[in-house]
Length: 543
Image (cartoon, rainbow, N blue to C red; front, side, top):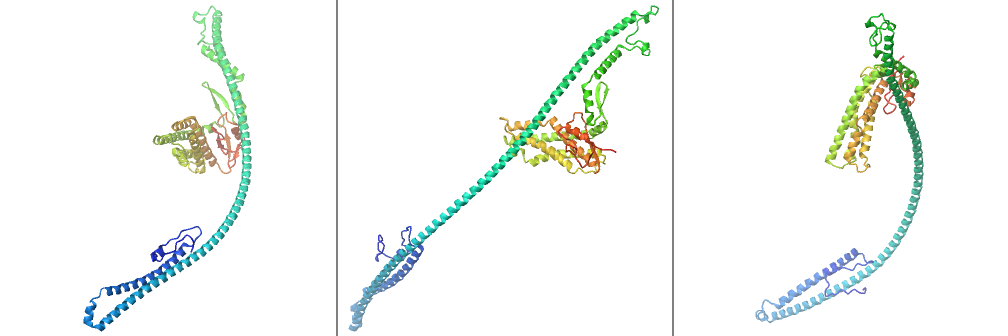
């Protein structure tokens, strides 16, 4: 029996104690379920023995009860049954006493045997438990060793895999870093090239501005000189008129009547001018006309600049009518017809876009009233819905511009469908407006500018000339697409300049002459506009 554990006493052991007996749980011990199962079988065996002992005890108690409380006393039985019956009764009492003794001895024997069996079973279970504990310890030691070996293998494999992953990551990082450096170099080179190009363009624009300023100053000086000469001419003319009148009075024949001695300067007759003497106002007018002619021959800047533009394909004729200078040319009728068709459509388109801008601003302000300081997508809404608002406002009028272009190109109205040209123009117009609005409203970097202030500033930027120019660009685009669509597949178009102050791209396109409908002009454009604010046009080539 293991040390430190008290033996089970036969005086206080029971089946319930055996079944409920618990053992201390140590790190290395028996299988608890197996021990409990074995103890339960021992408890059942003890329970059977106790039941047998109880039956015997009940039998002995019943015999004792009968012996202690006979129904009749011995004297009565002796008197009634006689001496022989009394002997039988005494013999029965003796036998009962013997039976009781034997029963008590048997019960004691059974109890000792049960106690002995329990002790043997306990000893066997303790031995088996010790053996199982030893086996379990061996298994645990083996399992621990195997687990440690497996952990070491897994750890080694994990370290090796981690090193490989780190190496691959470093290689990929180096490759990505090199790609980023290359991309950065390309971007910086591209930006530097663009910066140089922009710098050149800025310098060119500055030079052109200075040249234009010098031209304006020269024209202003010429005008001041002309006005000064006109003022002196008026004084000289008056002096010459008075001198002529004085000479006329001095050289009058004395035999003439008094009323004919002084010729009328204002409305008299002059034989040298068809019998009619010019008035002073007519004389002044002739002097001014002569001065203007002299100045024009001296080199008026506007006339010289218009003559220098003869290479652009536009022949300008200057006519002075009512004191205003008007320019006319061979394409003036085409330009006027285009403007008559397109101007009403552009005006309606501009009004509708401005109305859409107002509705959009009111929508955003309503959102801000209900949810102050909201921004981003929550304020502006989905971009697709934002685009559709302006696309719907522009699409119908751009379709009208396309139809007007087909009529201008010689097709019957309504015969040629707009196709993707109108959709592209409407999408481009709405994309330009919405992108700039969303960028301006979403830009919260202007100091402490509130959201409502950004909304108002963004929509103020789109009022007036800016939206007029943008609407004009896309109206010209839709109209020009209609002209190109109305031309026959084998037809040709020519680029028509509508302003003498066009850009170099428009000049190059005009110099190209006739270009097939399915080809592009030298700048890569199929039709105007070639730049923002371009109002040139294309016209079909006639035989």
